[in-house]
Length: 302
Image (cartoon, rainbow, N blue to C red; front, side):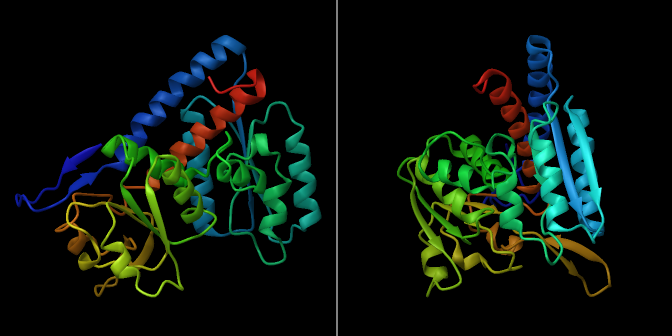
């Protein structure tokens, strides 16, 4: 969903309104959950595990619970102390794996020191891995087989499909190669028929590469990395980064990896921060939870 920016200048990009798109997606999911329940008498259940007392994570986890309930699903919160051992955490995951009321399991990252995220993530049954971060789902994505897709890349893809439709032949440049966003999104864009380039910390001239992109996705966590002159005129820009910065007056605001005020003068379409990719992540978590329930109950996504 694109909206024109408030500036009257015609040389400004259209704003990709992820907040509005996510709201519509959540309502669609809510209706699909109702239909699924009426047909199979099953309510999708999402278990979220938080280890430790990180305030930002606590707020995020509670927001997930609120959105889960709004979608007509059941939310099971497991708030564990910082002192939780890896063995204790794995025991909980094993129990949730066999619980028929639980269709999706998410462990909030990052984990406290002493807990290995890879071990913990891979302990979740692939069928319940609604974050899509386990190695089996990663392998399914890499080989083009059906599986649960990481939520943020899935959200980016949905926005791009809505904005651009057929992406075959477009040059997509992904800056950032994390397992969470960059790698899976690059694979998803390959499946769409894009020519995909991936830039990372060792790329010698990322600016030059970015200037070639019809689709530019930035997911580095480096605030303000991409300036306006990195962007090809008319390109579609997806800014995944989000950093809280302190202003001169002492107040704070959220900023992305792209210098928005510069990029908006060159790009054709662009996601804002906040209000772009962020809302899509939780919406796609709900979508994955419903998909997981469908697969577990019927053997196929409906």
